[in-house]
Length: 113
Length: 108
Image (tube, rainbow over all chains, first blue to last red; front, side, top):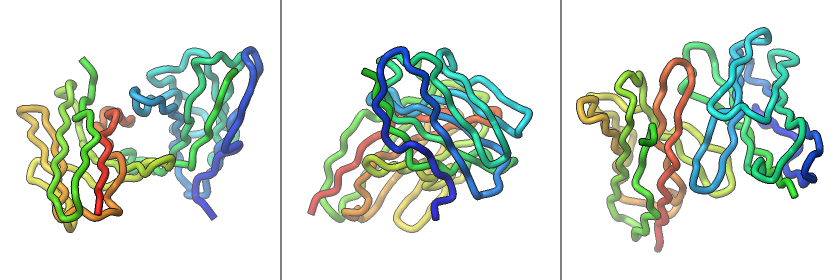
């Protein structure tokens, strides 16, 4: 079984809808991250969390919110989806002190129409 | 200026070729440096760390020049399986900044 899982893997939704992307990990890592990847723009950090009570904004947090429900679960929400949020979303984890070695989930391809 | 800039690519090379990727970073306070690999439609994975003294892992060699804020990755004897996008990554305070990546296509 994969160490970092993401659900759903693919999602098509309409403008204005609320959507949640979920991430779970079995690596026992404290730190979790959400990124989006767009062609020509690379990976950009949306939010990150160093433990259940610690949530931090990344480079592009506007329009997104997160919830760290447990050490192993970190969810990303789009309260009112818009077309320019169409992207590939990755969740990642790392162990404290080894933040450079991040383990990524398989990604969620989100399309907002 | 982008924080991490890479050669735009794609690089098309035959099997057995040697290929070099370059990367520059803008934040002189950056602490650590890495190369990640991303296969088509897959998640990125750590390839190797980059040290000022150089770091070699089989056919892969990574170099860092802090004075020039320059990072390189050399791949010798390219294999078909090396075809992927290579991401230059810089670490600041507990977060990573990724370059846009350079695509490598190795052909028979």
